[in-house]
Image (cartoon, rainbow, N blue to C red; front, side, top):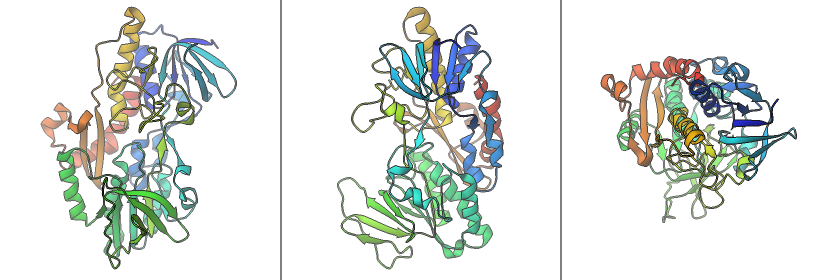
Length: 421
């Protein structure tokens, strides 16, 4: 196996495979390799549906080998360190590879240890996460007999920021079918200030919350879990406001401890774990060194070129981009990276394409209902003009549910992964 590549891609997830596939389609002679240790590739957007018992987990899995584009070498190893000055990637097995262009698409890691008590809580039968084990989520929903069903998310960026509320809406539907909803409190506790950042979609979701009788708790930043007592702790995180008002005899039985700590009992708990860029990225010269974005890949948000190293590009979940971390975002990022690399190869200049921050969050609001939230930088709505001709994507619809359950998985495996969209 050669040690030098024109394009070396770190990560064989959605972003890495798509970049390799599109580069090969446009210039088949390119010498490309992907560094990826995993033998399985997962279609994670369907895990919400798996967690609600309406999609088969095994249908979300493919062999990684089946997705590596023809003519692209697969280095089945872990990237461990980099030397940007010598254009070198060092792997866990002790090998080194050099490149003309480096594409960083390593994905995101679940940072379980960043939340005290999470590791122990996940071993309990009533704590679950679609991000980790959607099959367990389904078991937890089926075994729930009433009480507080708490859905929360961390203070870190996460994959698909809407996912923690999607499973909550489906849980509400399921609890009604199983006959336990009338003796349950469904609580959504989020460190955010709104249900969704784009107002037109937030308006619809607020109606969903009202219809379903969900208790919303904003500015609730989770701090720890005491799974033995079945209690989750939050810090009231409203900027400039340390006043936290909790009525001791409220129906969900939360209470204040100290000035701003809130303790909430739960009978079931679903959460998104804290998430971060992989350690080998955080410890590299490619990461943002200081500030609120520390640890994420330091790229220009429009060109996806590294801000310091001009032959390095970053995209996908680990990139420091102020938009939602979704496969839909990657679909719009990939052509920009591909265009820039191919143009630089011939002119030493960037291409004409730019990434405007597009992302999409298909928000399932119940069995057979979905809102397709599409937006770009600065929370500006950016809905597909073709779909919008036929469907008002700001409203719940059955057609969007069909898109989520059947259309998007088909497009992912047969178009996106082959570089054709």
